[in-house]
Length: 115
Length: 113
Image 1 (cartoon, chains in turn brown, orange):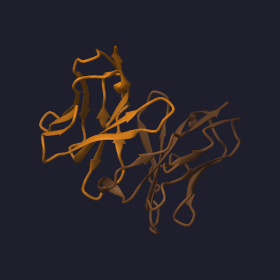
Image 2 (cartoon, helix red, strand yellow):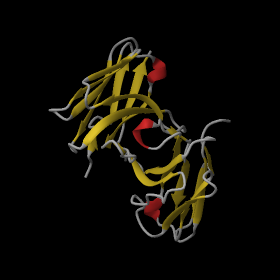
Image 3 (cartoon, rainbow over the protein chains, first blue to last red):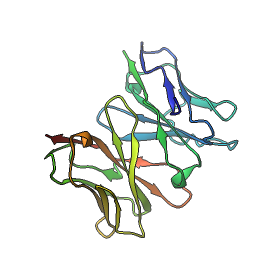
Image 4 (cartoon, chains in turn brown, blue):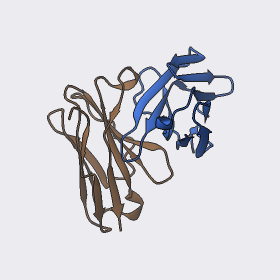
């Protein structure tokens, strides 16, 4: 399809394990975002990539979280040594241009459950 | 500290009537506001937006009103349809160069046929 694609859609892991979440943005979109939604909460900004610029990582909650975007396209969010509070839906979005000038298109999310 | 607040977790409305979803914000730097709609197991989709230089924006059945002095905005859906049943998120940007959206917790709207 032509939308933002995320995988896996569901991931159950044990506390202390590492997980990788993948996002394939819409072709041609230069901006890519990661947000997460914990139970009963709004979406929380994690990280922003725009073209070849250095990413804004200011929303990452701890140094266990990291993300990269290869070739200006696919992005991977990695959570090391997962904790139960990491359980959430992780949403990726892309836009043609960054900021308010570009409409964000969200993927369906990756639901992470840490036991 | 919630900068965007949606104080009603849920709302039920009869089909054909008006749905009014409310949103309050505390950050006076917010200057561009959006509403997103989310169906279960799907990502949020953009619905309508409003700049702080306006007090109203209309798109078909959807109208967003902004009251800057009260730091309050509302989304009106008229007439409400069963397909409008979803979670609605209010979100805001602060400053022309901003790209971080601050979201509220959402309001679940149920439109009863």
